Length: 90
Image (tube, rainbow, N blue to C red; front, side):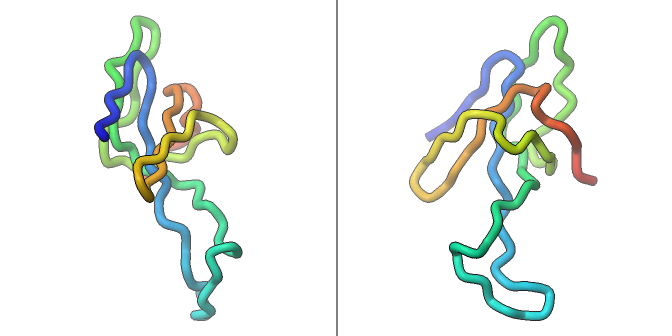
């Protein structure tokens, strides 16, 4: 499936959660927290009054309960508005 966002939407993919702690303890899948950092997969063209400030491949952080979740097999994507992205991870 190919997702092509429209207007000021951005398609994100959640980065992999940590499977071990810093001390080397392996975490069960149920104990792993969803990582807040996401990778930009696709960016819409923007709107007249909205500047698209992210590009494909960047790591970003967006609001916790924002966006629409779409699953493609085992991969989960989140589609958010540009204004829902709160930071770019550098």
